[in-house]
Length: 483
Ligand code: NAP
Ligand code: G3P
Image (tube, rainbow, N blue to C red; front, side, top):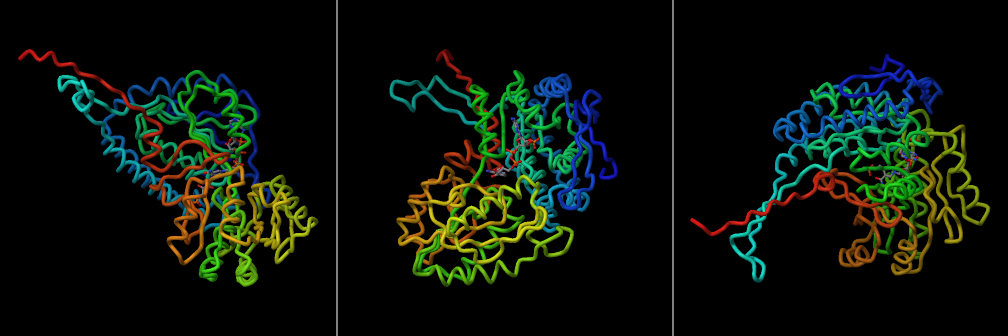
């Protein structure tokens, strides 16, 4: 598929290239080469894709669950067979290092298999009236789960395969049809994944795609009358924009983050430093769950900084096609400018540059800033790049207060050898997930994944996603008591 430089959209089982608008060029952040040309779909073409999803939905809902599962298993196998091809595309399209790219594809195949497993065991329940005062045994509610209809899945640039499939798989297993709007930078990789899904034998119209700039087609598709659910992953800014437009459409939103790593005085500092550096700088910090600030107890901060510095300086940076490279060029010049501005601003305000700080094109060296204060933007803003601020605190209580003062609430890490203390701190942190003695991370994909405050709404994770994109349907049987 990579040899095709012009990519159409899957609409009603056919790959269609838009003739109405000039194509969008996707250029590589690695070397500026052409990754592919995308259709910029017109409203008429978007209507056709959504109509195809609507027309296919009832038959798909009635499609036997075991056969839906078989299709997911087959799609997973096809995806795995394409792992080399798709990972090569990820490397060039979003500058993801090869190991992470291969891992994303294989993880997505595993997610589809697990989705099929869970989808087959998605049952309802029967409730009798006499379990409620005054109720009768002759009244029985049969509760099943039914699909919501057509799901609009909108995915971000940093995981074009996994964060599309984590929506598509559960939506389809729940009996919904899907329109996928991939991030423009990442869309070619996403369309390759869709090809594997389609080649597995999905009936026409069950899965459709829509490419085009989100700023151009976004409002149209999120407000479309035939979209019954929006599953969005992206920035808080865009998520809030969509939420303001779609008051009555149920949504799941996975948004920005500013995950804090709290390091207490009894932590194993080598272990903590290993985890924090991996969590902060893998894929150049372009992960929602990246460690985006350290809250370190004063008593151990100097020693921790030295351990972090040594590890950061061992990171390999540069071209994602080179083996072992962790920190690669950021996805755009706009991103690199933003990250550099945050870094420079903090240094001007008195932060100590421990290591890094250099920029070549869109490649920013992994940067460690010590003695960051809460007066600095880098303490609060999501950089989505390889810059890590260290804020020194006098107590665990101060760490919790600063962590909770963030507008974000995705994940936090707590490093300590005292499990009672860790659990007590975890109970106070206003986030979706607390990692005790581990970097923040979404995986494994069967775990619940959610953000609170400006980090999102609703819960993902395979079973949670299927439940979110289906709803209970109750049929109450009233027996007359006549034999
Ligand atoms: P983004 O700029 O918000 O874009 C996300 C998606 O929304 C893209 O497909 C984009 O399309 C589309 N979009 C843009 N404007 C839209 C509109 N008005 N209506 C509908 N869709 C619209 O985010 P990104 O740069 O791709 O990803 C980075 C951000 O996502 C970071 O903030 C990161 O924290 C967050 N993120 C969160 C999670 C999580 O699980 N919580 C996971 C990954 C990323 P275009 O590409 O065409 O603009
Ligand atoms: O930012 C994308 C989010 O899904 C991160 O996943 O497993 O790398 O924490 P993970």
